Length: 301
Image (cartoon, rainbow, N blue to C red; front, side):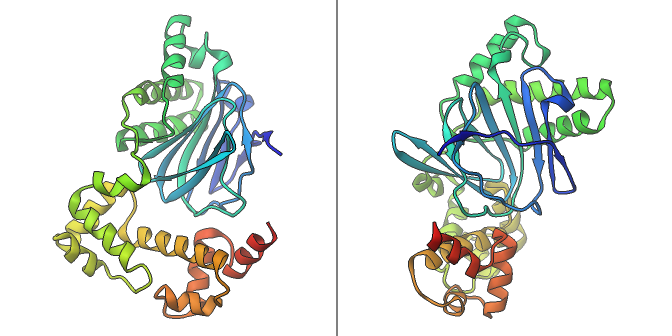
């Protein structure tokens, strides 16, 4: 049963959620920062009335499912991506814990369209209208915008009242720039849009995901030196090659755990891991579940 969900205030090393009663900024509900060590707790199907929700991905991978007309569409955001859900849009991360990742999130309350972020009515209406006109879910976002958002979060969260005012200005600049972002193409088109040499590496990973893959092999497939390949890969995808390989292996592992009766040991060796213990360690570190617990939770769903 879908419901309207709002997170409560929380403040610890890896999960920080600043609620409206704490920051008191017009039009801003929750402002959050999750580090890669924050547990990837599943978020059930829900919606937000009169609210646009934004997730700015810094590192890692986060999947979200949007329900519309009985159809569930999957979106996968990685580093330097922005994922948007609009008012009353049903969405969920699924019933299984997410991969660990770093992101900033915020909820924008459009009922405050005449005083949004303290702007006067004219500019407040313009900004809200532009945000509502962003008709895609997934966009490319620049590292400069992520940096400005991090500054805004720190000023609003840790600073004085004067610092908070500066933080709101940074936040306003970020939101005003979103209208110029480029949408991420459909998943099957992404490899064609990337640097062609990095695309060769992604194809190599896909074709050899069930084998051990070295960075030297990927650099060779991309016609780069090892150091240049690692830098170019992170520039294109926002995560390191090793992190990407791990995420792809974990995706394949989830599929095998859900659709086959293969033992965990067999799956570990099938995916090129040196031992089942190492596979289990990587799986739990990435998904916060052991492979056995994942398989059990799926079979009970």
